[in-house]
Length: 118
Image 1 (cartoon, one colour):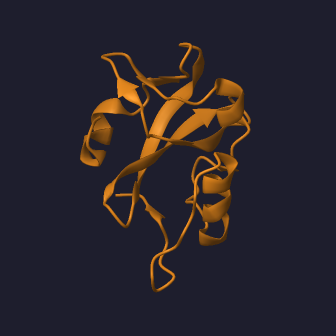
Image 2: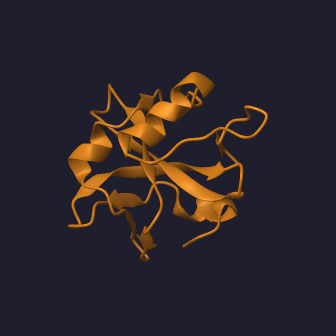
């Protein structure tokens, strides 16, 4: 797995599902604030005039020289919670991202967010 600070090298690379089907292009990485490790990627999807960023977990993801392969099917990722291409994930939408993938969600002990862009 690549480190969050390496995102500049991977931005705009293809993101594919476990069968190798293209989902979209890598936009950014969100880290888990509890561990400071990459947790989710945002992937640009949609038609050129209707682009949006969807979230996909990075657990089990692998990289190659040309793409990032995630373990989730393309259709599930494309239906994930999304934000505009110039937006940041609102705190109130954070739990929905985890829930979409049946991942447990628990904010920090003081109610802190779990996801942040480095």
